[in-house]
Length: 148
Image (cartoon, rainbow, N blue to C red; front, side, top):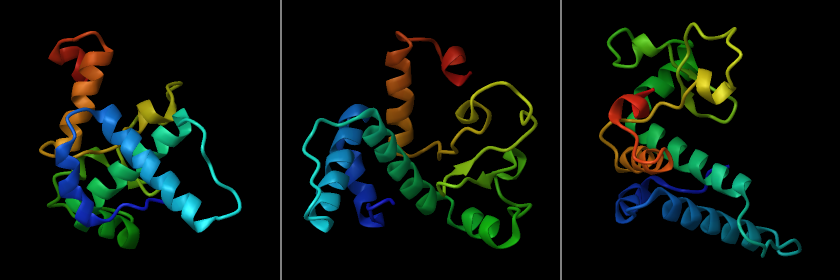
């Protein structure tokens, strides 16, 4: 469950690196979980699962802010409006509540995350952090490789 609120969206602007943002969100989620469950407290270092859940939480919050109408349409009608900019992507909402790209790759042997990529708004700060992190992870790859 994502425990961030819409008020925190502007606070995300303070981070200059995706890794730092994800660690802070993961520790905040852990603190809230520890407060709710007083008997079982987590005190170990963050796992990759914790960081993945933090990314999912951030993306879900951003999508709810940026694509409110599209998500509402998908939950009610199972299809976005024809005037939506996402119409050509054939979006759907997965079991985690994320807005993902649909399409023709259903029978592909690729991983689920590669076939159905998360949809992020192009002008959001976190999107820029994700692109920047991938740029560095791919050893300063050019734009064409990043787009792929």
